[in-house]
Length: 321
Image (cartoon, rainbow, N blue to C red):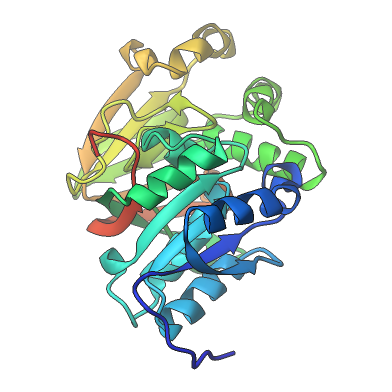
């Protein structure tokens, strides 16, 4: 499909995921539509119809001339838009301004940039237009013996984090989900979890070999609906932040879950933090470590992470960013 109409710099593309937030995208679209109109936005709205559709829409509409995008959905919808922005060649990625009206389960990037779930307030932040250019990440992985790659702007999780994301996504597909879905699966996943053996190279130096509970790599601080797994992350310093939790007892995990929300879990002796630009992760045996990025379940090890400095422009309500 191609588009031949002329787009001005004041026009917005609004990408709506009708299934986000237990179909809040569909139910509340009339309210959001009217608020955008009341705030004098000129826009074209498009609804996603299947997984990956937001990426396709983004690529096609950037080709048509749009440079301003509002994402109405959760972190997964935003991730699809980011993959569209970073995979196309029509427009420099950092010239595309992205606003967020968060309606998903986690809304962790909204939390990072102080974007509230209140529609009127989030639209006001977009209208004010204060933006911040942050880093992005690219990860390669395997799925059914084939290599894939995916961009992300928040966080990638491996080990236990990937298992919890997978269980949460399955719950959402069955109509469950909700704000406590991730927390519920944190407990449920402990029953079946087996610690993978990981070898981790950061900037060509081997910094860890052994059994791990979880590994988080990213640009921003939060995932899982407010858990601060990368408390020291700076989103535009050209470095990944890395948090490794080595093998730990399940009882100790339960006792420290509350500390995930303020980042104080990093004081545990089993936790190490690093920074780096390129990360290579192998598992033994192969295929025993799984991956999620921005809450989306992907494939399995081996993984290679590469940082893309200052490549995405996000509209922010955070005075620090």
